[in-house]
Structure formats: structure tokens, C-alpha cells
Amino acid sequence: MIIAIDFDGTVVEHRYPEIGKEIPFATTTLKMLTNERHRLILWTVRKGPLLQEAVDWCRERGVEFYAVNKNFPEENVDSEGGYCKIDADLFIDDKNLGGLPDWGRIYEMINSKKTWADIYSENGEELPKKKRGWFW
Image (cartoon, rainbow, N blue to C red):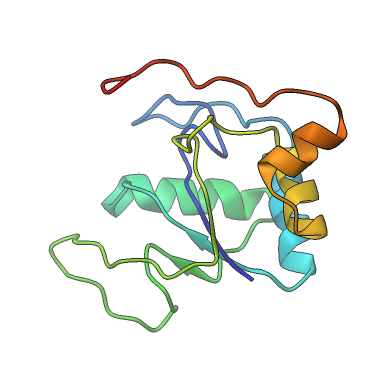
């Protein structure tokens, strides 16, 4: 499976342009997914030195991405810092409808091929409500 992962607010707490504290079990889960042969793409708005900091931060913790802000390692991206549309089977981002589940639940969803609603209903829980935003 190809999985695109956001960085700020998903792997680490929001502190942009700084790097926040790791969200519990994020790098452990990412390493497990890599070991299970999933292709991980770091998908972030960071570019230039800030992007390199994020890649280095992950690498220091044993997380290597198949590609960064592109579909394939050899793909050329706009030299102006533009982004291509990422083609992934799954996107993990803190801006999901309903927010970001904890990394244990994310792993369970991927490993068991279940939806977020499936996981919560099995445990007799209700899906958490997303905080109200611009449109609701």
C-alpha cells in the first residue's frame, strides 16, 4: 500500500517552523509499516531547509521514506518549490474529518483493513466529534 503521511500535527506536534515533540508511537508505527513493505511518502508543506530538517529528524529515528513530496524518488518536482499531486492509497493527516486517531488505531486500521468507524464500533465507542471550523 502507498501511504502519504503529513509531518506537522501528524508525526510531531504543531510547532511549525520548529519541529514539535513526537506524537506518541508515530515513528514506531511508521517503521513497522515500512518493515511490512508499505511505501511511505512524506507529504508536507515544508520545503527547502525546513523540509530537510523534517526528513533528517525522521531518519535519525529510523524512518526512511520511499519519496518526499513526490510519487517516486526519481520524479522531478518544480524547482520553484511547487508540489505534484500525490497518488496514494491512504493519506494520514491531522486534518482528516474527525481528526487524527492515535497511532495504535492507525496501525490497526491499516493492518486489519478496517475503517475508523469499524475500529470504534468494535470497542463500543462513538467516533470523536471534529472541532467546529470554518464551515460548521
